Structure formats: C-alpha cells, structure tokens
Image (cartoon, rainbow, N blue to C red):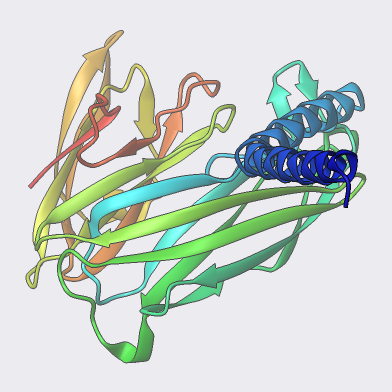
Length: 291
C-alpha cells in the first residue's frame, strides 16, 4: 500500500471520528434542549389556543383546576376517619362583561391515592350560559373516605386527581391534584368561595373525639349569615351589631359534633369578591372561628 493510500485511510478514520463526536454532541444537545423546546411549544400552543377560544367568547374555568394543572393542598384539615368533601366551582365567565352565552357541557373523571376511595357527586354536567338565562356557574363535589375503612394516621396525606373536560361547544381539559392532609385533633375550617358568586360556604371540621361549641364572627357590612341555615337554627348563642339603627348578627355559636364536618352559608354584599380561605394560611379571613 502506497503512502498516498495510507494518508487517505488515516483521513477517513479522522473524518469518521469527528463525525461520531459531532453526532454525540448533537445527541447531548437534543437531550437537554428537547424537553425545554417541547415545554415551550406546549406553552405557545396553550396561549394560542387560549386566545382562539377567548375570541369565540368561550370561557371554561375553575377555582381548583387549570389548563396547566394545579395542586390544591388542604393541610391539617381532616381527621382521616370520616368522609371529607371538597367543592369544585366551575365558571364560564371571565368577568361581568366577558362570558360564554351558550351552555358548556363537560365530563368529570378522577383517580386517587391507594389509601382512599372517592365519590363524585356527578360525572357529567352543564354550565348554563347567559343565552339560556343561566348564571355561567356550576359546581360538583368529590368526597374521599379511608380505603377499607381504616382511618389514616395523623400526618398522612391522600390525593385526588380531578379532570374536567368540556365536550361542547369546544374541547378543553382542566386538571387539579387535591391533596388532603390528616391533621392533629383540633377544629379547622375553610371558606369555599368563587368570584361573582352571591354566597360562600364555611366548612367546619371537628377532628376531635368530642363535640364542641364553635363561634363564627364576621362583619355584617360585608357578609350576612343565611338565616335559614341549620347552624343558625341550632345556635346556642349569638351577638348583634347596630348598623343604621338595625341590629345585624355578627357572631353565632352552635354545636359541632365530633369527627364531623358542618357547612354554613353566608351571602356576600359584593358578589364580585372572592373570600376563599384555608385554616393556617396568612390571609385575613372574612369569617373568623373560635371555640
């Protein structure tokens, strides 16, 4: 073999080595860049799709679910023994001036952690639009119970992954992972609310082994207790506040049984407000609880 042939072979080997190195570098770049590219592409697609649906006055929203997926955590708010129910509010309006006129039909599915079972209040529903004299709002509940009837230990967590998918007039899926923690033996509460809803619900959970008298205090210039609510009917004491020479309730006390959850309904003076609240958060609640 001549010198020229040896030189050509050496150049071919060098070119092949360089090509392999280049391929490896490209592969490494793809590994690191592809997920970001896919994530960016997904983000762009969601934004374009959101803009398109908004141009059609299509709004499919929820207080605990989103297009991107969201985690909604309820800590120290469950005894781990009795069923625990979470209300999920749905809406077909962006604000008071932007809403969907037509009805939105949607389906609901769930999966959950192995330490609990779940029950949905419904698997299909409709958000009635303004064209059919609806209020562009709907809701459903998901209840969890300990699997096999075995109470969960203090500090344990359970989760439910909820999906709501519209089927008409357009398709859009919202998801949310609801995480519920088993708390210490105490009394906790949360305010379930939604902007542009005329009322909200206060859920009181007594995780103690004994019942207790629980007091709710509030400012009647902002919210008013539903006087037909069983919490008021079964109240043991109450207090009032004078406003324009009228006496308005501003405090109510009633008995809450052990290992149970009680719901109390309040009406909002300003329906556009959202007074949602979880025990232990840094917010200032519209309704305060003592016992």
